[in-house]
Image (tube, rainbow, N blue to C red; front, side, top):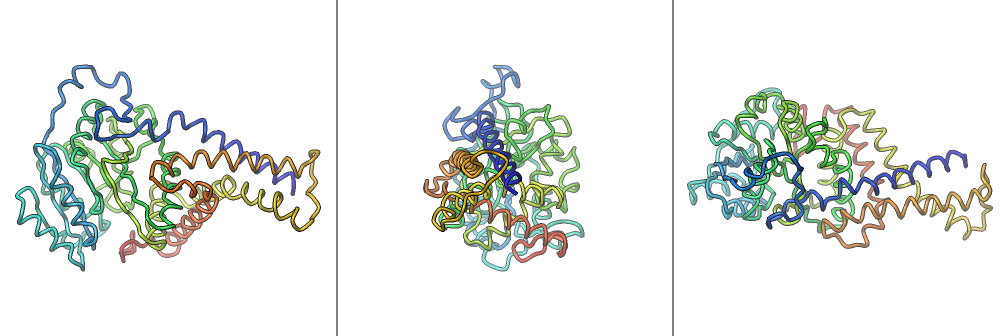
Amino acid sequence: MTTALLALLLFASMTAIGFALRRRWTSVNLYRLEPEDGAGVREEPGQVDASTAENVSYPPVAIIVPARDEEDHLEGALASLAALDYPAYRVIVVDDGSTDGTAAIAERYSERWDRFQCIAAGERKAGWGGKTWALECGLRECTEPWVLFTDADVIHHPASLARATEHAQKSGAALVSVVPRFVCESFWERLLMPAFLLVVSNRFPPDRVRDPRSRVAAASGGFLLVRRELLERTGGLEPVRGRVAEDIAIARRIKRSGERISISYTRSLLTTRMYSSLGQIAEGLGKHAHEGMFDSTPILLAAVIGSWVVTVLPFATLLGLGIITPILGLPPISGPLPQSHGVACAIAAASYIGMKRVYEEWVDFLGVPFGFSWGYPLAGFVYGLIALRAAAERLFFGGPRWKGRRIGRD
């Protein structure tokens, strides 16, 4: 038993070291897109010649906003889109069967500004997901050379579209995606959203997403800018019609076609408050965990067990062997090594501190109070439970539930 514990703790410590070393290539600060020119943006060498960077143009863009029961968020999102500093764009809001005031808000903007248009998604075709069908309805209205898919809860900085268009031309990317900064106000948001970004950034390292030699591809549905002609040439949205993580599926198809794609993070170009309660977090992160980041239930289960070994086991070892055992006067554990009790506590402490340092980067990036970085073992444990719940929903009910609909079945 002691030998197994030491082996698992050694695995946890080596994983923490690996995460820490990999930050040299995956640090969020290396792949940021901000309003100021060059702020945090790594342009890969050799992608384009110098003249491309000097002759950036701003082609017309169609912005598609699918919206379902978003009356609490849509007003802010559309107001930010109306204020974009971009010469030629229009906004198509697709009402996806909302039962609240979403459609009325969109109609008000379409009456006030010519560049806004509101359409109804209508009856969904068999095999299509709710969001993908709404995107498809919006795409059918487009004639612009570039299309931006964005969410109804994303707030855009006036420079967001211009900066993404510039980055696309300077990097030679046919698809540019930017991950919005999550606004975290509640306890559970502050605890779990840094964990979500940590998992995403390591499952889809931005350096490998941008590397045309790598098969890794990812995008964020909150901001996905793509060349319309290329999207249509790769099948449009039909091949991803039933996917929960349609953003990642689109990115994979674009990259497999031989085109470059790019993903970036931002602190100020885009913000969103995705979830406000633990229930919403469980639904949202669950569908992303199972459908987006891990394509099969066995891989998901293995990932959960591995994450618990790395995040929960070191803390539990420190708590049990380092605190509870001395307080209760229990004898120290014995094992294959001299002072196995002390060795286990030392490895556990090193693992805990190492992963905390990795977690701190995302806590800082989101502007979450620093004290939450100490709670990453709880975040890892709860996030694992959320992923297991998503796997169970997929296995027994056909898919996760989101906004009142069973994705994959309804």
